[in-house]
Image (cartoon, rainbow, N blue to C red; front, side):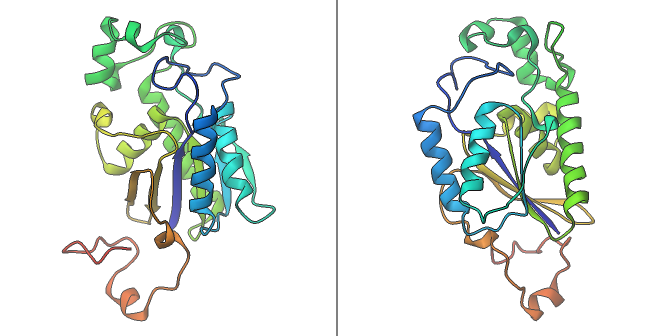
Length: 233
């Protein structure tokens, strides 16, 4: 089974007030750097086979903080498939202004139909397709026993999680992904399992590599869901 840790970048000066999109040169602010350092410390006990990041600075900085707490030589890869959504003409606009745009309601209720305006506007359905394809590709590259991390952006992660939950893209706005939050997917031959979603604190010791007990291995295959809910990590 492949374990994928999906992390949103930390806070920037514009997070929550403007739609920065793919605007270059927007780094983490002091809060974001503190968030990234705290996340790195939490994940230091989880040996990562690779770190994959969006090329945008705020993700690269978050990924670098995580990498600094890993063993030397942990590979860090940049993958364009995890870049922020192409918001087109919406890029750089204040959220208060965008909320008055007629397209805003469509983004909220029917995002599968949305293509953002302008020559650089991207369809939300294409965001989901490229991001999910990216994960499946890295799963195949790194193998079934791999544990690796992807650092990306809020809307991209929400689209990934909706796919893993079997939700239509129109329902992805029900998912919350906070800055520097951790979501965890376990991929099996049958289906993915959502192990964590929007986790912003607490222990991650359950993610460390341990040998399953013979009794546990006999009772459940990796792709089985524990009937009755199971006993937790």
